[in-house]
Image (tube, rainbow, N blue to C red; front, side, top):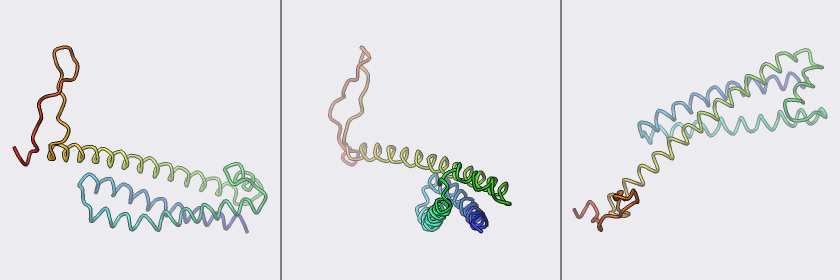
Length: 155
């Protein structure tokens, strides 16, 4: 009974993780295009998937703990050894793990793109506001400040 429940949770989470990975890839594309409307829509679609994955992860852990097994891969292997569906449990567990790792890697990629865009935007705003003047190199290779600059709006 427990192995059937666990298998159903794995199958449901694999579907959710595949949808999440697709959304994260779409998010990368929307970030590159700076499509804020599309980004908002993607975020609204990601939230329920993340919540469901978290909820199912807790349910899997509780199920393994209720069987006096550890809530990790070792506990899953122990359950698989005494289950008629053991091979499928391990296969689905590995499949879910691989999908979640791909989601995490894609999410990190999106985070790097966001940080890069923030730095670029901040730099552009600094130039427009006439903030920190750019530094140049002098004959000794040190940075040399050039004279006070006016904001671009006053140039």
